[in-house]
Amino acid sequence: MAFSWIFLVVALLHFLFIETRAKVIAGVVSSGQAWSENGTFITKFCFHDRRALFEYETNISSNGRWYFYLDDHWSDSLAETDCRNKIAKARFSVGISATRGQQLVNQWLRPHFWYVVYADPNTCDESPPTEDLFIGYTLTFLNPDSEGNANDHFGEDEKGLLTMYTLLILFYIGGIAYFARRVWQSIQKGGPMHEVLQVLSVAIAVHFLSAFFMFINLWIFKNDGEGSSACETLSEILDVVSQMIMICMLLSMSMGWTLGQVIPHPVNNKGQLGIIALVGGAEVILVLWEQSYEESHYTYHVHENLPGFLLVCLRIILAVLFGYNLQSTLSKERSTLRKDFYQAFAIICYLWFLSFPMLMLIAMVLPEYWRHRVVTIGTIAIQLVALMMLSKQFLSRSLYWEVSTLSSTTLPFKRDRGGFRD
Image (cartoon, rainbow, N blue to C red):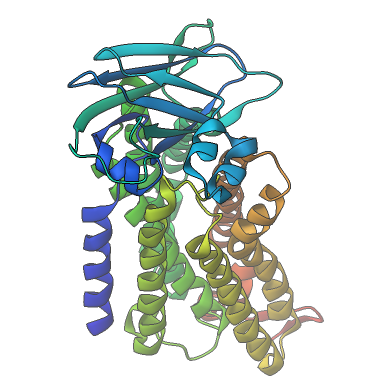
């Protein structure tokens, strides 16, 4: 119960403090802040390699400017200790002489991340400004759409995400319509197999809700450039909950649950629930921690930071724990048929556990603007394939059906590789 409260508190913190990845950015900047920071970092955006547009609106005009740094030169700019040299490394700047303005962004051979910094003539002075001027601003970043008009709020690194989530929602709806009756019939029969189907169905349903809320967030983002922070937060929390349910089920099955071993149901296994609560709390904390890097000038991709690295390590540790449990179970197993099932089961589960770490490793060698898409779309696609394979194992007369304790109680004999025996 204590672990459940910890998880709930952390989830609520995540809900309260997470910020959406809006590309209509609103805020307040001051000359004093710009002086203390040698230029105030505002945000970053991945413009397309064609004509894109930057627009700004402020509450007052000033002699400040928006400075744009190309990703290829940004690290050198951060390392620069001299303020004037740092400002000089900007590729171009946009003055705030009026309360509204815009600038076309023309690029070269490929898409680039651009980093936006605010500075004014007092930023590089030796002493702080005598008057601290506060400027309220709204910045809009637009990429060209399919017709070449600058109307697309998505950065090049987010291109295709809305299409992917749309297809995912349609796939889930079709899958639910096709499998719902078979799942319900299997659950009504009772027995250990129906318990697995119950847990798997809940995990899939929660993941569907996660995808649905992210779809709503991206659809709103497409129209206003801000999205819905509530939908995005609900999506990420539900995604973590779905993963925790899957982890709980897979770890329990690796120890022989529903396969002849005397293992309590995951809901009644306090030790297992304790581990899952700790893992779930740790994952939510790491996701929340990542939000401080989300608009950070220290990273290109959201997972290229310490909490992202720890998330990868956490998934690898869980895969190792799964493998250890499975090996311990296999060492006690005498049935060749069950061993065959565990081998096929292990491949599917390793695919589910290691998809995220593997794609993170692959993304490291890709251009920066590809990384977010590859990791996000790839992880969802691979884990969806794993869920389909597990569903097929549990719904058909496969090895699982034959080796589960349900089949042994409903059949008059038990089949092993060597033939049939009473």
